[in-house]
Length: 64
Picture 1 (cartoon, rainbow, N blue to C red):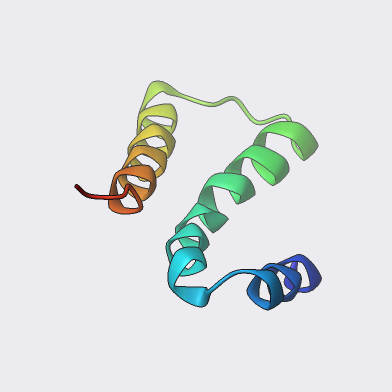
Picture 2 (picture 1 turned 90 degrees about the horizontal axis):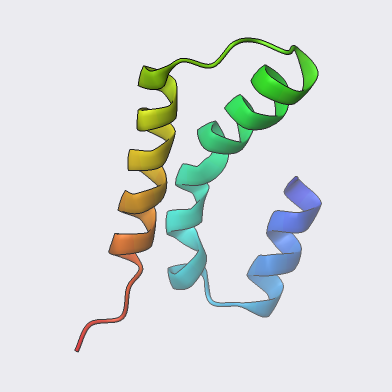
């Protein structure tokens, strides 16, 4: 993941990429919790992942 992150930083301004670091727990839950460990996912977890995703997209929307 660090190689991908530094590749993105090399190509895009950090000001555009910094908010996407908040997706780290989202991908962690999806990849390790659901795909690898086959843990059940509840409504609270799904709503939390959804709110983090929506918040990141809203904060990165262009204004005006």
